[in-house]
Length: 151
Image (tube, rainbow, N blue to C red; front, side, top):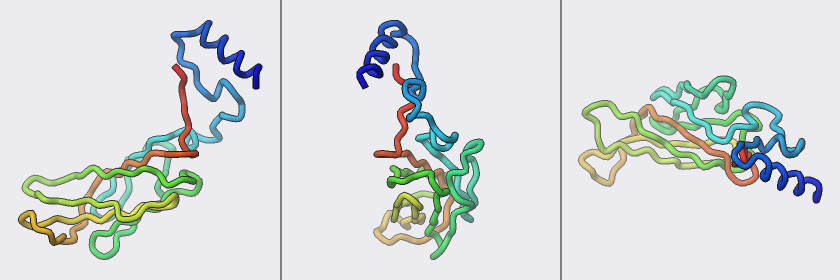
């Protein structure tokens, strides 16, 4: 451990302006695959639950998202992507003339995320279920997060 810290200190002293990939510092930190090295994931989900735009070679969502109860999307993550519940967010894709749309993450785990879509007519408190396209973004957290670069 002392040799490792000394090598790290010397590396920063000699290369203070150079970014150093963390995996170069210690063999146990190398990623086993592209998906293992990635922390940020995005995908486009159509109103029918069809997944696209996951990024080359990532395939972090297993197939398409199931749509049940008119507008409840359940997206199952591919095996091994997350072992800790990720932090997920939804960005709306709204067509012109539509307003008061709501996107709610109603359930989240390390294996899937559920999103309810709909709208509130006239700004009222009642949700009208309506399947609507959206962008899903999920980020590794906790023990899953892989720091990539030291500056």
